[in-house]
Length: 258
Ligand code: APR
Ligand code: ZN
Image 1 (cartoon, rainbow, N blue to C red):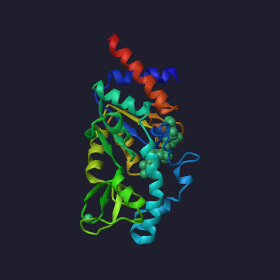
Image 2 (tube, rainbow, N blue to C red; image 1 turned 30 degrees about the vertical axis):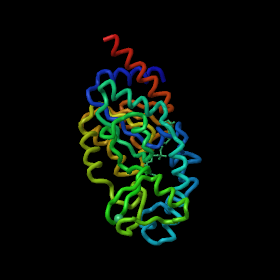
Image 3 (cartoon, protein in one colour; image 1 turned 60 degrees about the horizontal axis):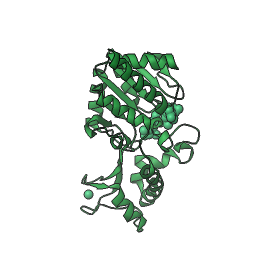
Image 4 (cartoon, helix red, strand yellow; image 1 turned 180 degrees about the vertical axis):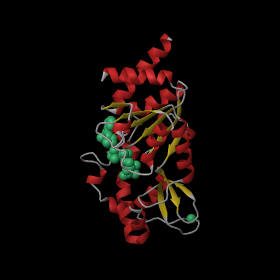
């Protein structure tokens, strides 16, 4: 592992535009389960209950969705950034980070200290709730209070429309502007680092390919294999927090020595 840490630290020291692409694996050390590891969320809930068409189909489906999402929200509220999130902030402070493209909805990159405009959220953010009809945004906490007070599937105060967490569910349209920016960032990177993602959900998982196509180095830090491992210039099979902390420390030493 030390050899890989050293190599990545040197590549970061040389890099001009680092893009970090994160998945649920960067937040497991904050206590939020990922989706596809043993014990992950898809072993506790049926993903079909989270499809957008199901959510739109009936009041009963929305009540069930909000009940499950209330449990998830409890976990998100309790979670704090971990060393993996703070390592991304360090990269930003070094002037190396162009952006973080994240599939996560937990807001932990921002909570760790990254400016919001440095975080591209491909699957939205669970701390906001959006009206599907008029687009009005609500703080998730306010909606949770209404649910706890008995409103099983809250409606918009303004237009009576259906409210949904501002996340992108399976079957829901991807956010155009975020997708455009993410692809632009991937194609503009000289070092693209995937951390904690199984890289099985598209179109998000295309981003490492765009980076590779455009000539970037591709590094994958993940506990388990991904479909893109054969295209990576470097694989590090370790825990995100530990690996990234060591890499950042080593990068700082190299930059100081130069
Ligand atoms: N350090 C490094 N890797 C980790 C860690 C960790 N501490 N914990 C878990 N992992 C790895 C797992 O081995 C797994 O390969 O992170 C990966 C997480 O993969 P998924 O659970 O599939 O999560 P993700 O890739 O983010 O899923 C993408 O799927 O369900 C949708 O919208 C949801 O955004 C999510 C998308
Ligand atoms: Zn509305």
